[in-house]
Amino acid sequence: SLVHVLKHRRTLTEPEVRYYMRQLVEGVAYVHSQHIIHRDLKLGNMFLTEDMVMKIGDFGLATRVDDNRNVTICGTPNYIAPEVLNKLGHSYEADVWAMGCIMYALLVGQPPFETETLKETYSRITTNK
Image (cartoon, rainbow, N blue to C red; front, side, top):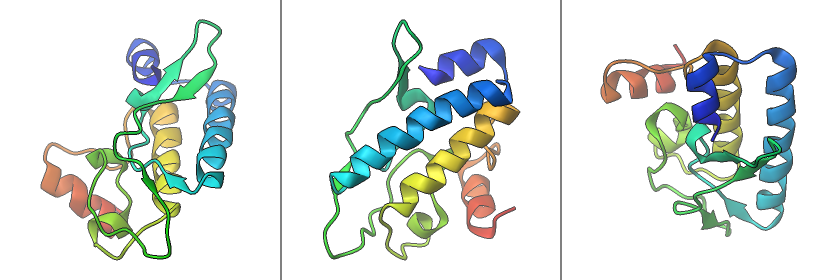
């Protein structure tokens, strides 16, 4: 998975990140075209084939989109969107937020809001600090 690549490499180059992000965006666009929100996009759920082709996995928290916005808090703490934490209701944008967190983590070597405690991480996400 991409988490293993990042642990081994620490950070990736911009061309490498672009290569993986393009595949991720295309995969998520397909999932969304099927009216599904993944809700747990993270490095550990981005699997790689022997040819380094990315496959999105672990659809255990995925849900179909209907007319109502989801208010269930779910996902991996470092990748949860603010609207999910604030129970404002969420849809496709929660996956888009997670993709931004993934891109940041690949470039910098850690998720953008990571802290020592869950409470602090959630605080940083909701205050965008």
